[in-house]
Image (cartoon, rainbow, N blue to C red; front, side):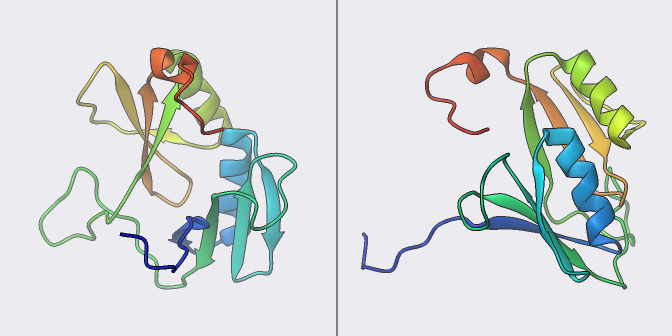
Length: 141
């Protein structure tokens, strides 16, 4: 029940050693723009959107960041979250991600998606969802 407190998604924040470098990777991957960078934080969002007009991806400097092991391994850093991106052509999306600096995981579990790693080692998935992307109900950029 709504109690008068407004809550809206502003950003998903990702720890990394080099915020600008990782922000530039995701800007290329998504064809988004770098919205701000101050050395400790960098943020990307859809083209033409000013800060606060979008849910974006924010990258936070963490000098102690350790990339997660994926698939998980006992005693190693575990992933805490990962991003899923809808794509309409999996092969071309994988090629594009690699050209931006991503790495394909050596282990895959489905023909419908590809597990990838960004330049800081975070896993993310490219998910074949052409029908969903073409539907009137898919509102994300």
